[in-house]
Length: 289
View 1: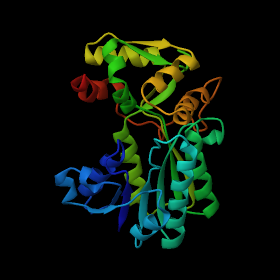
View 2 (view 1 turned 180 degrees about the vertical axis):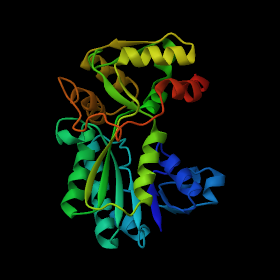
View 3 (view 1 turned 60 degrees about the vertical axis):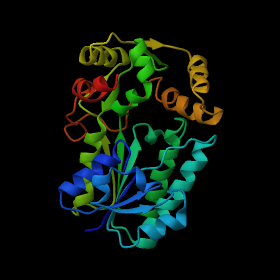
View 4 (view 1 turned 90 degrees about the vertical axis):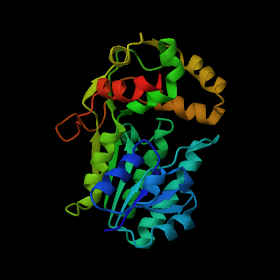
């Protein structure tokens, strides 16, 4: 079995690579800069330097692949949805040209809306394009990554995280490692076909105050969630150096999932994963503070 993995140094991709290695698979990893791979990992994988938005390069790199873990690379430009369209064209062309048997696509809760959820709309576009292809694909509709807190270390140190979701709105929080486990299970199993949607909700739905209380207890640092206006968040993102277009796409991921949004897939035994925010915050976040 030949398995290709994109974003192999990402929050989920690095775990996918490690799990495949432990399963006895030597994965093909597609990375913009293979030099960023850990030296020990680099020796165990087949690494190819590829820009995922370069359709021809992706098609060439995935020739002979049986299963593909695809993550649309994050955008840093002013038109994120245009970047997502380029990545979508790459994966669709690769699956079609190379007859890839199974694709696991890292999507997000909210992609089921199709429109109106900021950057998540780009993931929805990839889902729709793979569906139109008639590919055997599992869309992983993931909850809010624990690791997003690593992007807010200064706010955590200061004791207040600004949010634009209602403070009483709960959302699924999930460990990237658990997403990888679900992805690898699908990649290595040949006992499924057609279009599947698999939500990955983590162990619990949490409001921001609940998440802040959990993180505070795990790290020993006082932390609260502070509701701010959309404009205030926009100003914070601009001050961090984010372009106007990207800031709107990021804000849209929250504004598009408020006002009564409910994920298409409910929390069940299949959609619930084990790693708690408390355990992750103690093991990962606490040492980073």
